[in-house]
Amino acid sequence: MLRIGNLKNKYQKRLIRPLYAQTQATPYAAVLDDTLRDATGTFVFPGAAFKYKGGLVPGTCMVNRGEKVTVATGAAGGAGLNPPQVFGLLANFVGGELDDLGGENYVGVWRGPDSVYEILAPGFDDTGLSAAWDAATQGVPVPLAAGADGRLAYGGTVGSSGTLGNKQVVAYLIERPSASRIIVDLRV
Figure (tube, rainbow, N blue to C red):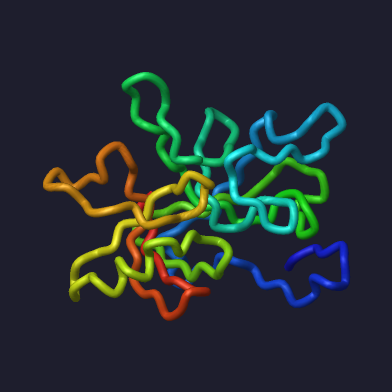
């Protein structure tokens, strides 16, 4: 249940919905990285991440930093290093008008290979996704990776090695019923 602080948000829907998760997925209990809160406990928005109503959206790709999680921005891990590996998909609205946490740092992160989710816009980046879905032949998966803003985005074509260059395949697109809704098969 969403904890809304403003009546104008009463029709807001949860942006990530597990469809096949009973035995395939785990809502992992995690703690937000310290860099996402200032000294007063106020949410500090990570610069490159996607912002909706002043906060992070469910479905955002998260990276595990030991005991804590932060937003996966698709950035390289340093000189010659691959980007950090995505740990799972954020289950909560964090910060802003739709904050599920009420100032706390405990979040849920959905994980589990072969679990299937419905993700509603703006919980994913539709740029290039429509064309990739339309061009995909039956049985050819459309890979999704962590985009520059932390949301799932079209990852490009999979090379002969089965990878996306230095990007991690986070999920495969199963269906794109509309520009505001996708169904994905999680791979992390």
